[in-house]
Length: 107
Image (cartoon, rainbow, N blue to C red; front, side, top):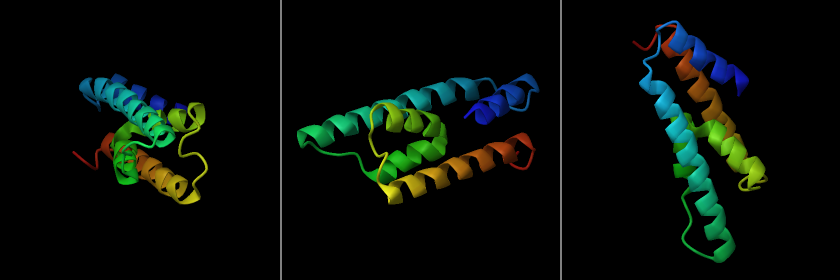
């Protein structure tokens, strides 16, 4: 997680990332944590649940640190092996895309 934050900071400092990316990163992580919290509450109270694919899309979009914190603090989706495997794949894909953007391969 620190490496990801360092890449973002370097990208902003070096002018390789526009500043709106920082705001978007904060927003998507807060949203992701909130969606996990709502889904945890729904699971405990027998209400409608968030699709796992939606949780993974939020992680892929950059909300993976927020998802990690939610999994740790809320103890939600932290045991299901298949979910965790896909989650870690979204982390790798997101970080690869960020690296490609910073490396100039995506624009």
